[in-house]
Image (tube, rainbow, N blue to C red):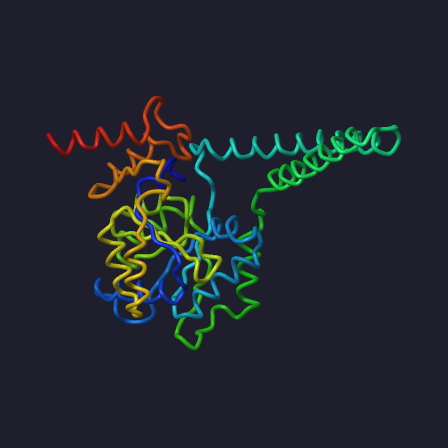
Amino acid sequence: MTIHGASATMYSVDGLRFVHLHQIAKEFERSNGNAVGPPKIYVDCNNAWFRGGKSVASVVTLLIRLAAVGFAVVPVCDGTRPIGKQATPMRAADREKARIRSFVLRAEITELQHKLNTQQLTGDERTALEKEMSDSNTALKRKETASQNAISANFVEELREGLALANAHDEGDEGGTVAEVYLAEYQADPVLVQSVLSKECALVISDDGDIAVLGGDGCIEVMNYTKDEKIKIRSTSLKTLKRAIGYIANSSVRQAKLASIVQGTGNPRQKFYPVFEGVTGLNARAAMGLILGCDAIPKGVLGAGLRYVSLSHSISFSI
């Protein structure tokens, strides 16, 4: 469940590489007493499909790249969506609205083209029509993409086949490998959260925001993971992020990243609300997420937002 405004509650740092992720994960597991074997990393494959190009091939490539640097990669796919997830029908409705709008735009573009081909127009009139037609074509492409923005019903089978064809389950030179695809009972999110809470791993591939929130201060979400050297990690805990950066072997890189830790979105106009930092109870974190807004309650509690949660959080800790 994507938590509304989660970015404004976290610390982040970017410009990392896959090898840096491996160094961080290895040291976290070592400190947790899991020094044997390659470090694990859990991947939300549905999220990776949307962020990495909306193709099975892009997900397969990501999983193989993680294994190539030495990760024991655990790919997790969504199972049946919970009935209470209001965001699912809302997204389906958005896709249908985009499809209808695409139909209307195509008709408008046809009419504009007819005018350009058949009517006598002044230079200014022709320029205005050409600009309108160009804008309509741009809007059409966006709406057509939005109308098709749904993952295949055969995604899990196609992913399993793609990994098998690529021999991704074989151990690589660095000892990494890709496990068989794990199909969650409902969504991948609880599986990733549990992997962190049980200390199987510290890093997870997902940029929904809810994993870092529900996984606690010891959880690190990996974002921008499709481009090496531009990878971003974030956590609700400054201490955890500093510890992670401290594990990077190259001292110059480490110092550069420590100096560039960003609070919240990084936009000076948007206030930083570290409301989850220091909150150890999973139920408390989940309740705060519901108040802010998530897939179960997309708009959150009416009249409540980060400022309200931050104020309530301060009051509860001062009592």
